[in-house]
Length: 159
Image 1: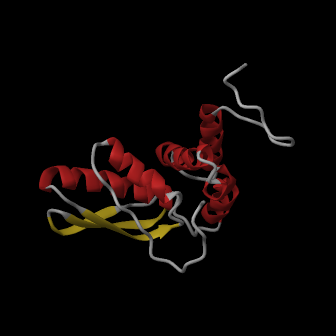
Image 2: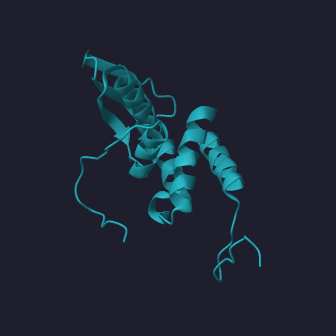
């Protein structure tokens, strides 16, 4: 017996690291800088590994189109605005969602560590991506994260 799962008929299994590298290379060719391409690919592979194909690597072509059409900014200048120590808003400058939300999650961790609690909002981003990824990154830091997105209800919950 092997530890490698048997692919379903018509499917090919690709090791996660190889898939992540391939997706990042495609996104970089589409105009994202190396770090943003890796971040976006990481979110896609994270979702794919959990069977959330709607937000997995199947999103790469859609993101390439968003980048090519200029809907998503390939070189966003993201800025945090804050009036209070525990609250911030990220102006994402049309950054792809995985780039913006990863930055927001990092900022939330920093602010929560300093003040005990934090709330970080994001505006002007493109497609949030797999929202569970960002709270998982917060949880990896030993904190509790809650994330939600404002949008029209158009997707049923998994399971």
